[in-house]
Amino acid sequence: MKQFAIVLLFLIFFTAVIPIHAQSLSYISQFTSDITIEKDGTIQIIETIADNFEDGPGHGLWRHIPLIRKGQDNKKYKMGFTLQKIQRDGIDEPYTREDTSQEAVIRVGSSTKTYQGLHIYTIAYKVTGTLGYYENHDELYRNITGNEWPFPINAVTTTIHMPDVLPISSMAISCYTGLNGSKAHDCSYKIASNGATITTNSILHAKEGLTVAFSFPKNIIATQIPTLAQQDQSKKDNSIKWETATPGGKVRAALFILLGIGVVGCVLYWYLLLPILIARKYYKSAFSKINTVPISFDPPKTKTGRFYTPAETGMLLIQYDSPRFIVATIIDLSFRGFMKINERSKDNFYLIKEEKDINCLETFEKMLITNLFGASNEVEVNALNDNESFQSAIKDIYQAIYSEMKKEEVLPEATIYVAKQKKIALMIGAILSCNTLLFFASILSLFQTYYTPYGLSQLLIVKGLKRFLSSQERQLNFEADKQFLFERLLSYATVFGIEKIWMERFADANLTSPVWYSGYENTAFAMNSFSRSFTTSITHLSTASTIVTSSSMSGSHSSGSSGGGSGGGGGGNW
Image 1 (cartoon, rainbow, N blue to C red):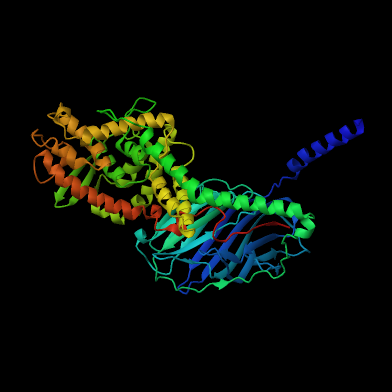
Image 2 (cartoon, rainbow, N blue to C red):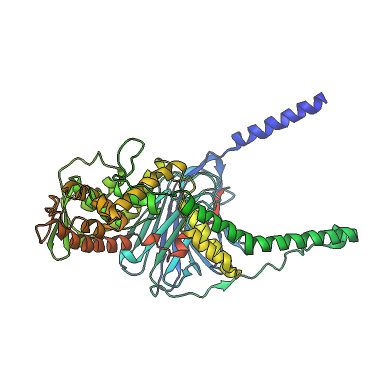
């Protein structure tokens, strides 16, 4: 017994220590992928891999690239692959191919030579059949690095080249980092008129990768008809043999009964119980959590004591991106003295930056001012349509607003975007299984919002403020003659979409035009036409700039993740 204990302790120590000493010291300092999408649908790819081989002398690099991708119909399709060039440190390098039916396997180097330290490998190849074709856009959804490298990749840069110059607003990108299936976005991108550039923001550890979904208009690239992959005919027959698995007739009968009960139970759950549970959960979310809404005259306060900004208030209420967040923030910043709004001709608005320190503002407010004006002190709203920096920054501004709400602990840790994606998948499942009850229950669940207990108390204040702003009851107009009240809450009325109602409440107040706004008329109610046309201008701009969040780009966003799409694989040293 004592000897057994000693052996057991030795094995535990051995298995615990060996992985630590076996950990690879090698790493890739830079992984660069240059992708050119040709007119005929062929994709030209040049990978430049800065390989730091620190585990001892080796022969070179090996790279494996999958040749099978899963299509929209869940079927597997074969991609064409043509290897064009392999170099090490700028000089052609010998290699061998060890391809399988599933992937291209390239072993770079010679068994008669050894290397160590930093070497730059260049692998150039062409692939066909890798693009996705959707109803309203085409898409390159590709795993750039692969998720099967046994050591870290310090930095990744991907450049995508289009054959034609396109409007920036017609293209969209999502990028994903991390292990297989990860929805993390630890990456940055910039869209230009001829393509895009994507970079990682931090190190990719072993088994982590970068995946990119890049969508562009239809009829730019020729449609390639994908080739259906042949099923592997060598698969073994794994069907259960009842006579060997269950040698008694009674056992077989019992198994069939249990199987029947399980099937009936699943059918009842899917077609009856699940729709009831979803509808009940929505009812409790929509009606039971907040039964009465008292009037609030101010927005809620953060844990540090400041009032929520209009954008934060809107995010707490609706929990999705809205161009009204941008409009309301501009009005709020103008009221607070950071800029002025000037309508110089009909529907032609200019924003004028005031000389005021912006370090006191929230992160998303500073991002908005910085990307609006750049190095200038004045910007024309209509000109923002051609401002690439501002267009690409709007999505980051929305994300910064959402991050502020997460810090306030008013929203649960599970992101609302992931929850809504699951419900969309549930709706699709209901359609495919002809489950009418579940279909309507899943539609209801899409409107369900998510809050922490503290978030619910803040939501109560937000709804109370909206009730005050939208109410037509005269007894609530106790301060309707005050200019300050009108201007201070105008941005909140704007984010709620009820600015017209708020203005009508002051129709008899004889207000003067705010100091931060100038238009055709010298009264505050030139603001009525201002709000309508200005909101339309910004909304159009914001919608175009945040096309990456549109549900119409289903291939890019509703199902994207690290490790998804074509390409991928990985590699290592040998």
